[in-house]
Amino acid sequence: MENKRKMMMFCLLLAAISSPVFTGEWKASVAKNLDALIKSCVVIPCSYTHAKDELPHSRLRGIWHLPAGLDQRIYHDDQTTILENYRGRTKLLGNLGQGNCTLEMIEIRDVDNGPFCFRIELVETGTETSKIDKFSFVDSCVSFKMITEPPKPTLIPPKKAIQGHPYTITCSVIHTCPSHIPQLTWSRGTAEEITEVHREIYQGTWEAQSTLTFITEEKDDHKDITCTAEFFGGRKSTEKLTLYVKRTENYNHIIIPAVVGIGTAVIFAGLCIFMLKKYKNRIAELQSQEGTVWNRLSRMSRRIKWQG
Ligand SMILES: *[C@@H]1O[C@H](CO)[C@@H](O)[C@H](O)[C@H]1NC(C)=O
Image (cartoon, rainbow, N blue to C red; front, side):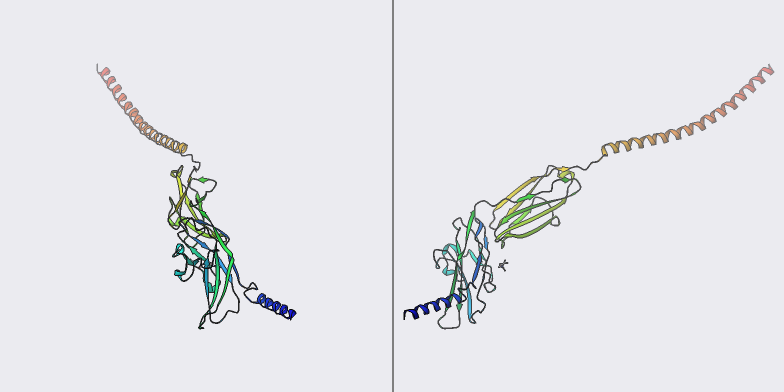
């Protein structure tokens, strides 16, 4: 009798272990820790896998709750069943049918540090007495590290700025709200000069990056470039950098006066040659004229002498 009972208990245990709920076919993966910027938003990445042999008439229900109790809900598709503090602030971004339980929380307050836990319920529908197969991932909770000041963007400039050469500067900021990406703006530059990249660095933490490329000019020297990050909710942070433009070597200060000098000399020389030529003819003319006049005069004087 005692043995029989022990055997039954063992069988029950075995059955329980081999049921999909306990074999580990239900698994959730939730980010453990995330930074949360007060007044902004956070997206909690969450995914789960469920039993392959899904019940025909069933519906999935995702719930997020505080560890204190299953009734301490921060998300439920029925808004009236969640804690007042969280009403209207949480939204399931993921598609539960695809194993995605990603949650968005907006208007973050300093008391929202968590932990927040995900729970999935398989609700059988179509029968009078709804049978609920529940599974709660109480070990899959996320905690927030509250950030009071918006993080400053990081500026990565090239080593040198050379006049007339392309200059590429990168501005990036870390955040945890990919559903509302922080906006990066520059103090200068047109749309064609700016490119943006958004990527996940590690689970739930993202980097928004903006790259500005322009050709440096002499007037850019000692000018400031600023990059501003505006987070969802309106919080802003700015980083500044001063440009030092290396001038390209030029000899204009030598070449220009030299060209002007040589030019002037050539013009003068030309004028002189022209004048000399002109005068040569005139002198020759004068000399020949002088000759005839002299001859005439001497002839006249001889004639006078002879007559006298
Ligand atoms: C889950 O859903 C979110 C929001 O739609 C999406 O950004 C994310 O890529 C999804 N995750 C997976 C693993 O598909």
